[in-house]
Image 1 (cartoon, one colour):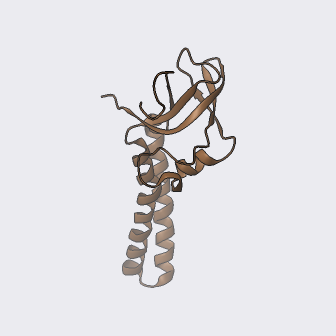
Image 2 (spheres, rainbow, N blue to C red):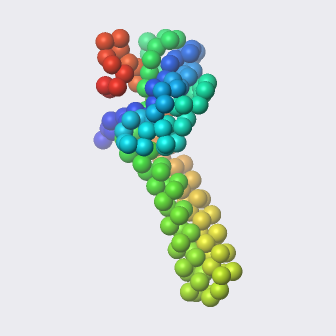
Image 3 (spheres, rainbow, N blue to C red):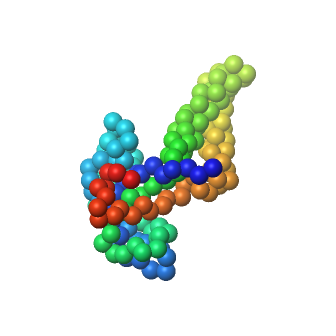
Length: 151
């Protein structure tokens, strides 16, 4: 099953060498435009920073100066957000509750919360390592006749 890409940010190709493109994010003041958060999310903040450059595998025919979109698999960013934010936060609460009710006291609750948090981060890292395509970024070239927001 192939997944359609979800654009994250607009960029411009700086150079292409050996199938790898160096791109510079365009400071457009907003993220992907997929939600109402705009520049308040991490992607939006990354897009407005000056001179952010990435190296990404280049599709054939890409040249310096071409406008491109940076994309990840549909749902990939959402799953990464769950693994990075929701899962560890849930683990902290679960660990604190188990520590409080299992051992009694604030000290064991804090220690169990820390242990569960670290275990959640390790589990999230393992989950991402087992699905390398989840974090991969691909380039979507924009044609001269196609507006940048329609891809």
